[in-house]
Image (cartoon, rainbow, N blue to C red; front, side, top):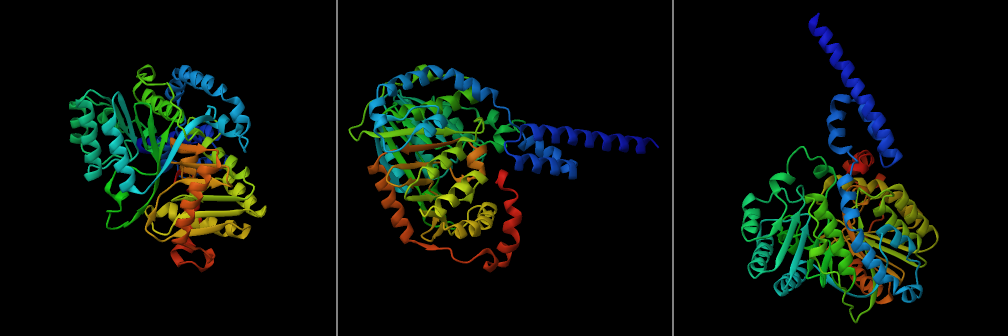
Length: 471
């Protein structure tokens, strides 16, 4: 009798907790689909769903907004700088208002942009800039390996610290979970400012599991900045025997956009450590003779309107002639999916470049569930066959272009911390257009519908699509 009472009480407690969690999900989930998914899962299988909800259903970012408030002074200074350029801004061939609203910053002029294509070129230039550092270096990677690339980066940072350069260094605890403790200790012993990996990897810190910092940022002296698709590892040099050649794109930035990029780093550092570093950084922008109008858009799960999704939606709906996008994954939300189809139905040249190779099976499978409706609307799906393609970039007409870390998937749109460097000038758009045109030549167009794909794709793609909010 005692065990029956205990069992009944346990079941009642479990169902009560599941019901409360379902109400919480209905109140706080970011989309109706997410709310319905959690509610059904919690009520149908509470024993499995409750632990999952505790890990993946968290939406509190008080610390992040504290970091945002701490950065208000720097934001105000940058807005004052860009307000003096208002006359130049009015001459731009595109309405930048939605992008500025998403970024919380103004488009600034006087920027320089250099496309860095593939790993060898990118790492060579980044390491050269680190060697030139005189005041400080900011480094942030989602994935960092303890291989030849990671060790070279470590060596460069240690050498910089030993010659008196201040170095701030952080990685994502999930993406870089395989880094050994000795890697961090060597940096710490050299005087590098870094986040204690033992603290950031504690299992109770749920935000580290689902909400990942996917940014790849290097900044030298507040004068030169880097962002894009490349993490620090040998696979990004094409040395992985399984993945083979690796196609990726990074950018070297100069001008006021570097201050915008380092603002994002400072906010992340403050959120992770509660240590303000704004007053220790250089906020005096130096104009580049290229004078390209640009903007850094930093997005994350603390945003209230799904800024990653709104960034792509705003760019696609601004198009008048073409929309070319490259991403390793295609698992879009309904807003971006509708924008892509609508652009194609308007008669625009809409192309999406994706890898034919696989690095993560679930997103790769889920993408097949979207191909048919995109193709039926007139979107061209191109599969890159020159190795694994990992770049995240787009070009809209000859007016808007972007390179950064945001994938065309729900996770990048709403769950990860991401960065995109946007430019609003014909020269930048032409450079990225020419780059993507070369990639298209190494691709084949997908023409087979889902019902003619391999059996496992036909069966699994629609099922895996249901997991889109957490892929």
